[in-house]
Image (cartoon, rainbow, N blue to C red; front, side):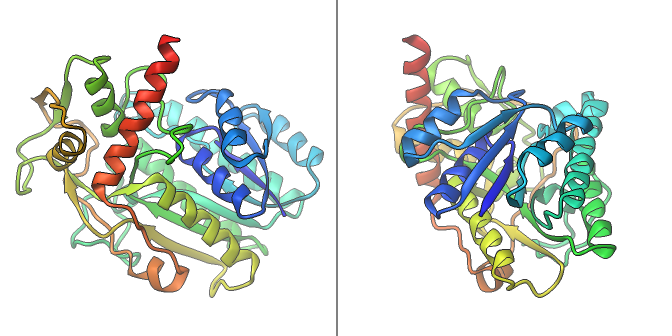
Length: 341
């Protein structure tokens, strides 16, 4: 089975490519390298002993996307990660997010439909729940008005996929995941944002490495035990494994509906300060931080009810918060040595 992984040189995508190859799938990566590096392909090959095929282009280019499907007639499934993903940036530059995240999906689904590729695993997000009414959040929780253009693109993308499923044999599993952190145990791949990080964990590790003077903590007056925002942090390898499990469920004909949804999280919420303390505990280092105003578009607190994923999908997050933060630090140390070499 040949599987297309869009955004496959990115953070979650690269870890998923590793898990796919180790499970026997042949992988083709499409990525425009807007927030990643082609060197990741070499790292994937070092981990698995298999070099995935790689095509560099922007999926928002409709004609190029159509040509890709003509060039790869043996594709049987797609895992779609390629998207801009920073909540704060989406608030200040919404058109970038609507163009990239939605045009790319439309072109992808059109290419799949035209070339009879009917299996899609889609990278969605817990942002579709907004500030939830109840915690933990199950799949039946209402999808609320998005708090950011990023979150809105995920909602619209799910609707596009739903509508396509209604009028064709298209099958989709939508994975709404919470907050991935950590890195592969090899420390050969991990989260390596270009420029200033938008996510918490790489900002912590870069601060520990001395690249950043301090960490900004956005908001200390939330209605949470320590006043900082709460998220369900999940190890990226656990998350990657869920995509393989979802794909296998689809290919084995085990889906109960043409479109299924699963929340992917640990079921435990941790505050920003909890993550900082975990990092300090496993590394013995102190992280200087400053309390800032709340950041527009941020949700106060959210964590998953993973029961459906555990029982129906047959997947469960296994790694602890300390394992997540320690693996992220090991990766940051490797990146730092590379940059100094």
